[in-house]
Image 1 (cartoon, rainbow, N blue to C red):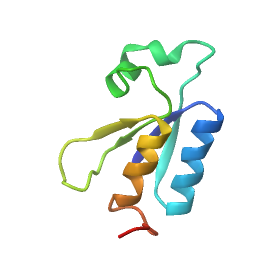
Image 2: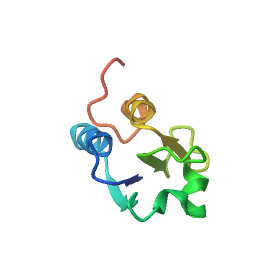
Image 3: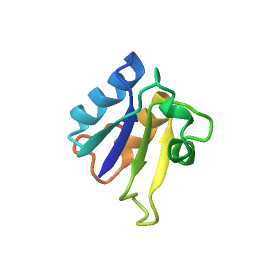
Length: 91
């Protein structure tokens, strides 16, 4: 299961569209940038550079502990190659 930490900005929506297209299960965790949620200690554990959107993959391909990925470009490079992706391209 992917936890998607985002606010409805264009980059956050871009990742949501990708997860939908890949048929991946995910839950959205709102991160209100107007209130400064991105500076909270819990969010900084996921994205130490204070970058959004951010995901936490609780079932990484190697079976290890949860992994966090932040910034839309990095997320778009990571998610197609996860086991949950139904339609990975380039494999």
